[in-house]
Image (tube, rainbow, N blue to C red; front, side, top):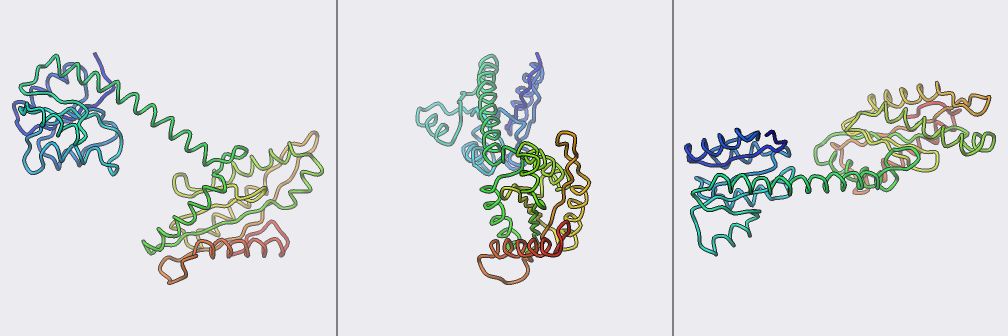
Length: 306
C-alpha cells in the first residue's frame, strides 16, 4: 500500500522510534523520524500531514511541541497523535487542550496506531481541501473579473503594506501608473466588446512583464493599470515601464475587418524607505505616480514619465 501522507515520528527513545518508523515505512508511508523537539520544529512542513508525538521528551515536552505545531506561525495543517504512558483522565484532557487531535497509551498497539493514522489522513485531506477552496475564493475576491489582475481594493491594501515594509526594511518600492491612450475613442468607434478585449490584452502584457510572485499588477480604474514593484529603484522601474509601453504599442486588436492599435502612457514614482517621511507615504507615492502619468499624457502620450 502506498500513501500520499508523510508522517513525522517524534520520539527520543531510539528503539521505539525505529519500531514505529519501520512499521509505517512497510505500510507505504513516507516517514520523517526525529529525536528532539528543535529538530521537529525545524523540519515541519506543509507536506507532513500526521505527527506521532511522544509526550515525554527532553528540553521541550510533547505538550509544548504540540502547542507550537498548532500555532499560526507554522505552515500547513498537522494532525497530532500524542503517545504517552500517562493514563489519567486529567492527562488526556491536558493533551487535548494543548492541541493534540488524538491520544494513545504506551505501549502502542501497532494495528491501533495504523488505524488512528488512517483516520488522521482523512482529516488532513479534508482540511487541505477546505484550505485550497478558501485560497481560491480569497484569490478570486482579490481579482478583477475582466482582466484577471488584482482589483482596486487589493491594490490599496497592498500598496499601504508594501510601503510600510519598505520603511521597516529600508528598501525602495516603485509604483507604475498606466493609462490607455484615447480609450474612449476605441469604445466609441469599435464598441465595448472590442474595448474589453483591448483591456484583456493589455493586462496580459502587464502580467507577463511583472515579476511573478513579487510585483503586484492591478486594474486601478476603468482603463488604468498599476504595478507595485517592491525592492525596485528608479532605474529598474523605468526599465519595467518602458518594456510594458513598448509591448503594448505592438498590440493590434481585431475589430471586425480592422486592427486597432493601442498605446499606453506611464507615470513612475519611487518611495525610498531609507528617507524620513510622513505617515501617509503610500498616498504621497500614489499622487507622485499620478502626476507623472499626467505629464506623460500632456507631453504627447505613448511615453514614460519619471
